[in-house]
Length: 232
Image 1 (cartoon, rainbow, N blue to C red):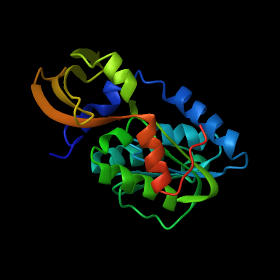
Image 2 (image 1 turned 90 degrees about the vertical axis):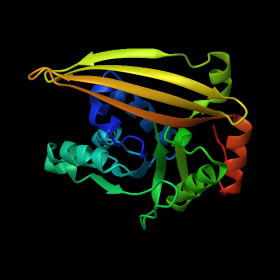
Image 3 (image 1 turned 180 degrees about the horizontal axis):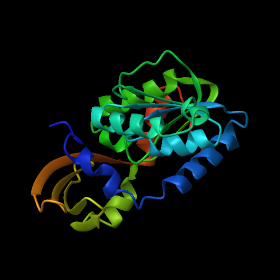
């Protein structure tokens, strides 16, 4: 199953409480700390383009990459609603973060919201680090987040229920995790119950998202193998 194939329909509603603006501001400050004159970046796993939009608002040129057609459709719709000046600083394209080659180099490559943790095999992680390196100018920075191993093992994943609604839908999401400690993996089984307010029609969606949690030593090894140096 292609993750986010059905889940993606509810993505923006499920994460509408996520502080995208504040996160983008934090990432922008990180980039400028290390590349003060940064003017462009590549985002690996851009989703529906919300981080990309906020980063473009800082004046950066942003090229977002995602595998999901649905996510890219949402990103394109978001871009179309912006002013011409802002829209010109945004570009979205389909690609696999392990293999995509855009033919450009940027001051920064970023990957947010655990896109790295969706690379569950060593070869996947190695390939994504190489993708980042291939799109960085000399002196550029790769900024990413991961599901952090010590935190996962200290505060173990538990069943979580989230209820949300907008003018059209009422949604309940049940996330049931299964931990595989020998492989540093967690299978998160998502069950989403959605009701259309206008018709009362209900649908049920189920997907399993396999995610890997990472530790600092292996991140250091991955960086080294890709020709990158950890600075923070």
